[in-house]
Length: 91
Image (cartoon, rainbow, N blue to C red; front, side, top):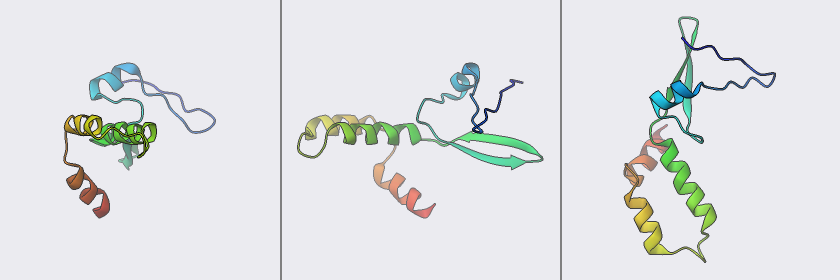
């Protein structure tokens, strides 16, 4: 079991070993819940990929965007954007 410290602003740092085991990266989201008086964090699948796409869109606005480059990036996304958008709308 790993021990973490809560800062004055309520923030915690996840130990590197746990982040690596769960493949949690900067920008990823975690769902938090309470179960049996315990705090449970679960990685939200696909959120890192969404952030990568958002960063790309910020970097290349519509006037400068190279469509072929954008297509190549989107091919690397391991989920269907339309399916993901539908799921987010449902949530």
